Length: 284
Ligand code: SF4
Image (tube, rainbow, N blue to C red; front, side):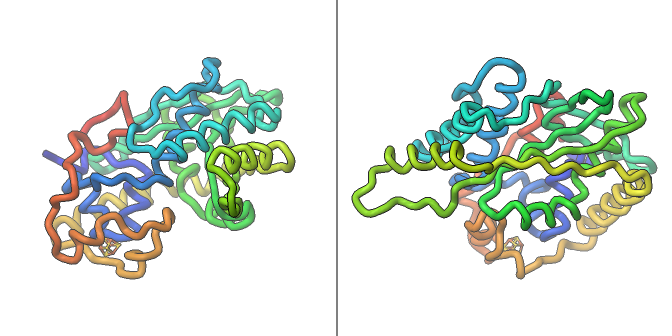
């Protein structure tokens, strides 16, 4: 099986973070039996927002059974509270667009899923991405400003439509990470405080990132180079980036630490497909 038939932005990000982690995740298709709660919450919130913007309200549809009950309730409350407080941006969104485009000069295709596309009142098309963060808004903006994600997505979409001008907008929902269980407080009371936190203050932000033509033009060369580096890594052996073993964005450490240190794969499953999050183009 050619594991480089398709690549996604997440895969590229993983490869640039640690090649060994990329091999475990995208070539060997290993996945830890115990899922990261932060990751599951993030995808659950995404699912709820997609359902909401599709006009179906929010439900527990798509909720991963591995998501702990308290996290499931909090994710639901989080989206419900921001909608109820009237703070979720009222975009007329065409939600969850999957795409797949050729990478010039390579046999690999670039694929992914865009959270939404909006035609705003100025007649501009805007690409929407939802993010949740436990960090401050300013910290996340720095990361997003430097990220390739929207550049890659804008380039991919520009290959599929005739609409010439695009910009991207991140809708960022902060998480009340400083609200902890107080003495004698129940989990339910904490959830109520968290919901109130969304109603009291502005914890939803929009960060617009205009499309810069030179950045979009640089995308094919970037993708070409990345695929070349992946092929080299497969042929010559992957490198390890030990600085990343502890410093995962999910604060739970690298999920492959045990197997990376020579342990067995008893607590891992082999995924059937490489990009399980993609339904339409789930290949490779
Ligand atoms: S444990 Fe460290 S070196 Fe090994 S895959 Fe994870 S980040 Fe890479």
